[in-house]
Length: 319
Image (cartoon, rainbow, N blue to C red):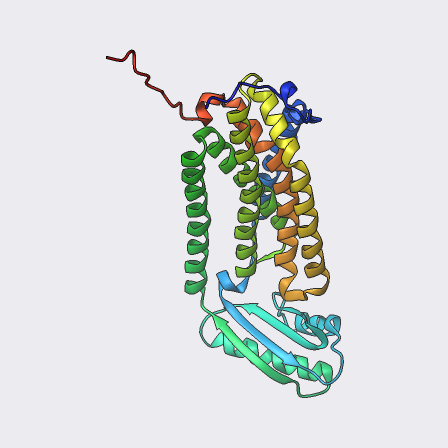
């Protein structure tokens, strides 16, 4: 049976459609400015690479008394160890110290010097819980592998969305994901947050979360193109985003609550991961509403691009 063509005005529930696309030029401008600023920050400030990528030594210690980090840092600086990072780990009695690789016996000498200064500062012999070393070659391989993983994910996403929807939505989706990653990474560079494997995992999580929102919106756009054939692509996009808006906001708010809890109570080891997720979710939610769909419209997305026409062949007579 053929379904009678309908428009938004003909739908029996008469939805209240929010005109999201009236702000698309403004949001595009703001997004472009933020993305450009992020690239400038990255090029100027660079990244604070963690030991997972640069190579170095990690020392975890346990003390009987609460640790005064400022005093330890001051004593380390007095002997010329300026690049040693010391911080609490889970509680005030546990601390972790790490320093970049110096090569050869210098790593062993630096490690022994750090232990002696910490013990002298605390006036006790601390318990060494673990000492780990990551070579710079392994770190370089991890960096290359991580970059390949993100690039492969973007290519796979483009192919998937192109096959399921249209290349216009696919290009908008991939551009929006690059936009999300660029601004998030720029924030990491600006705040001098250490880039380690947990940050890489959080960036991939941001891609997955942001993609999920964009696929939901794209699917609703295709569904409305099938049901509504009179109104323009502009109106159908507004309707589709309006219908998925409450779902997008509720999902984002719940996820943000969980990430905030992780940020506050997750400890120092998960601080970078949760902070990256927090920024990525906020940027990804905005780009799901505007950037991906708006760019598809600017590329000329129409009904015939979303639906493969079916040609019915009727018999011309009976013998």
